[in-house]
Length: 82
Image (cartoon, rainbow, N blue to C red):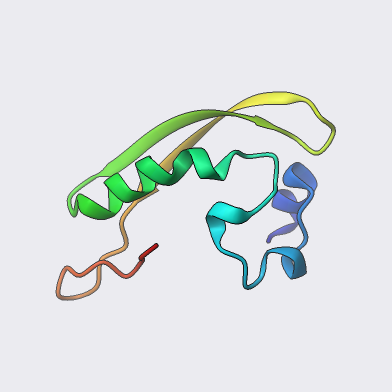
């Protein structure tokens, strides 16, 4: 995780490496992004936006806008799966 992410979410790279994204404990309710992520993966042509209330590492609430975009390979197959 880049330094800005570590400062905001309080998660070090070694804590996140090898973990499923939806299981990360970073103050951003990533489990709430499951539906938008799956919707994005099912839609080849667009992105899906979501707004969730998160908590920074100091315990302050913030609204976080998330945009999910499907990564497609040369044959238009999804390169990401859950």
